[in-house]
Structure formats: structure tokens, C-alpha cells
Length: 451
Image 1 (spheres, rainbow, N blue to C red):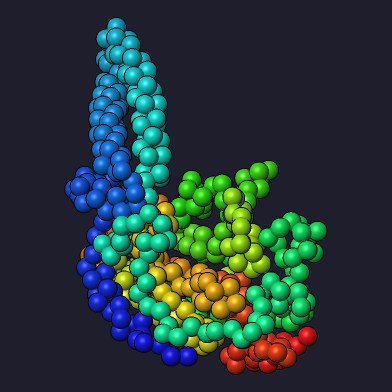
Image 2 (cartoon, helix red, strand yellow):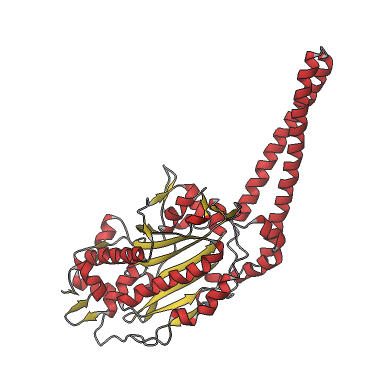
């Protein structure tokens, strides 16, 4: 398969620019809002947020109220402490009337401090809720745009495969070869929960092990995380409140089924302070993923194109702020290497503001081409969240001067299985069977799926 140029050569300058542009991010960091409000508001308009400046103004006003209320409360507590010491001295001196008068004053202060405490809690909750609902600030490289039509293609293979006469889409192939059963999934669970059978199940297992082994060879440390999370974890990585309606919720226990392994793996480091010498941290994990995909319908969800449960191998990095864009490039190169080894035609997109995930500062999507469907299928998103998640997670590190700073978090699919399997089936079909890529054959134990 021929390509016109390499990903690394084509977008090298973009990564270099990125090294110097990772300044404005957070959930959101209030100091950044105060110092760079106009720049932040301008960046947020890339997402189509017309009232970004007003939202940031509201955050500043609430923070001012918080500071004023806190100052008043501190003054009252200080006076109360001073008076409490005086009462003891007056009683020792036998000045009970003066002591009683001061007690009356301390009672008034106690009542006032309770009011201020309640008011402070209200302001802090309102401020936190506002900040939780403001998305991450797009990176300078992110183009303005409304939807996927405004994404920028940074790389595409030069030649796309063409199917011979009689070639079939994967939803016909899986029936013909009896390797994935959607009807059985509907019977047992519902639509979007297929059974993988026989060589279909072995292909799944082969892809998972191949992706894990490749990540481990690239320096990632494997973890197998839980597939349910608590509410704090959902807020930590930004799935809550943004994607609450898209996640499966176990109401009785107030737990959520994970939409991606990013969530539990990144939350390993919630409320953690690392030493600079520990960086970078690189983790990989395989999990099933669960997404309600509410409102999804039509041809684009047919077959394996969109499921409610699917398997995915996720790579996660915790990085020094000065090195996160080098890490983003490395992660994109890793995903690209997997697609090359599988022999799949692919392209890379830089997402526009309107298509950017809520918590992401910049995202590169990888898509594989399905010749049988004549369409591109997303199989990976690689994102840098800069300090946005770290601020929610309270994930920091001590630098060489022993100063605490927020870290940068990144993650990427390496890879999501359903559309990879669909593309492999469609692009490798022959008259007498479906060829298995050479790199998978040691994992499958067979080189062809036969009828």
C-alpha cells in the first residue's frame, strides 16, 4: 500500500508549534481566566460558544464573591478567637459582667459565621458547577468549525482499495462465516450487544493481545482496571456532567459502566502528587466499553459500525507540561504503526472546535477506509487534555524547585476493535475466505477465515 508522505514528516511543524502553545487550559484555572480572559473567550468561540466571555465574567464575579465572603468569615473567626481568650482572662480576674458581655458578642459572631459559612458553600458550589460546564479551551492549532465537515485532514493514504464485483459489507460477511451473531445478542441483552463466535471470537482475542503487546513494547505498563466507576471518577476525567446521559448508570449503587478505559486508568492518579523524576507515566489497558449512544440510528450504526458494548485497548500518559506535545506526537505515531502493520488504509484528522471532545484541548482522529461501504470509519482518537483533567483530579507534581504544578494528561485508542474488525473483514475478503493479516496469525493460529 503506497502513501504520499509520512505522518511525522507532514505534521512535524504542527507538533513543534504545540510545544510553545500549551499555555491556556484547565477546569478552568481561575488565575488563567483572570489573566487571559479575552484569549480564552476567543479560543472557546472555536467550539461555537457565543457567550464564552459572559461565562468567564460570571466565573470571575463568583470568585470575587467567594474571596470577599471568605475574608469576612476569616475576620469574624479571628475576632471570635481573640474574644474567647479575653473571656478566660476576665473570669480569672473576677470580671464576670464584662465576660458575659463578651460572650453575648461571641454568640452574635457565631451566628454570623454560620451564615457566612452557608453562603460560602453556596458560592463555591455555584462556581464549581459553572466551571464544570465550561469545556476545555481549544489549542491554537484547532480550527474553528461546527461539525465533522470542518475537520482538517492532515494525512491520507494515496491509494484506496477497490472491491471486486461481488464483495460484501461486513454485516453480510459475519452471517456468511457465522463469526458474529447480532440476533443472539438481541435475545440475551438487546441491540448493540453482539456475540462473537468461533474464529470471530479468536480474532477479537488476537487483536486485543496484539495491541497490548505492541503498547508494552513501546514502554507502556499494563493495568487491568475495573469497568465500573464512582461519581468522583466520572467528574475527575470530565465524563460527568457532560456525558451523563450517554453512560449506563447502576442506580442502586450509584456506579457507572465505563465508556472507555481512560476513566479508571487516569483516576489512578486522582489526588496524587508525583515527583518530577517519576515522569512520564505510561499505562495501557484493555476493557470492554459501554455507551448508550442515545439517539443513534440509520445506516452509520449498522453492523459493527456502532455498538453499545465493545472492546478497546487504551493508552494513557501523565506528562510534564513541557513535554506533552512530544508525547502526543509519539502516541499518534504509535497508533499509525498499528494500522500500518494491519495493512489497513487510513487517514488522520485534526478535529475542529465543534467536533472536539468536551475535555480535550486538541484531538487527532484516525479512520480506516471500508471499501465495501465506501466510507471512512473512526477507530481511534488521540487527545491532549493539557491541565483540564489534572485540575479536576488535583493531579500535580513537584518540580525541581519543589513547587507544585498541574500535570498534563493524554490518552488514545490503540485501538478500538469493532471498526478495525469490520475493515479487516471487508478489505481482506476473497472468493474462498477472508485473509488474516500476517501480524495476527501468531495470535489466531490460522491465516484465513473459511466458510
